[in-house]
Image (cartoon, rainbow, N blue to C red):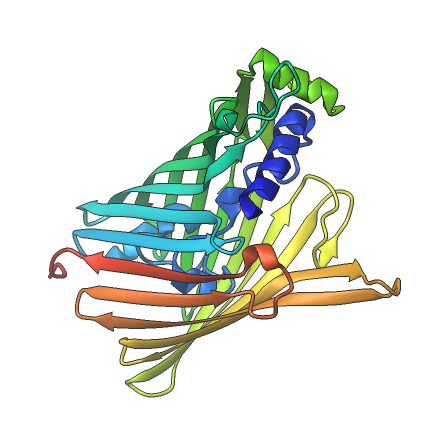
Length: 357
């Protein structure tokens, strides 16, 4: 039953996709990767220093320290109906540059297709029910380089987007991200520009005659081939690490995500730009055991009594590092403000060789 509801939503989505405004395009690429970052409410643009930097800020790839590093992540949404998977690999080219690749998949599988349930004579035939998948893919190739200016690192990612709804609709997209990190005394600063060239998704549709008839009969317009645009987004961050003893430390980071596609339901908003701030903490013991927390996703909505209510999304997480293996866990949206983003997230990170001397 749940999958039939999801199919109904996707059916409506496909029928209206050609008329979409740029806002909220390719949102699966904004969910986030790595349980460490998610436990800190995605406050990670500045402090990211591992293979996941290919997604968060490619400049951070230079922090891998080792020759190679691999990361994997899995999470589920909508009571397990939607699966979100991530894998990445980074390799050090030399002492001042790193190359990384990342793959993201967000999909709903085995969705019942009931558009041909009733034949031309009006008879219900359950043998005509088939299944399909609605899948979004993101593939990133990232490069990071240390600059001659002390403390400055820069990087960029080229990404390919593939979105597919069964055999009915599909899109190819391409975009570029760029990032930088800068260390100043005890402070660290980060900048990430996503879709700086804008990302274009070229949609094409392949609908059968029976499906077109279903669209008409249900009052939906038949979708046409079109182009969907993702506008640039700027992520700014600042972080500082506090060492209380030689074993105990605390990392604090604050980020602000700026969008320019009109007013959004965030803490700071206007017709020109909207800014979504979020904050994260990570306590560390001997750089082996980690406790994390963060808040973000500030929103305002009107309840049943027409009263404006302000909400935010808290996240928590833990991590353990044993030699060259790191296992992280995050519980997102523990305030239950957004059911769609509630999830238990697990991620694994492996260093494949010893540190360079």
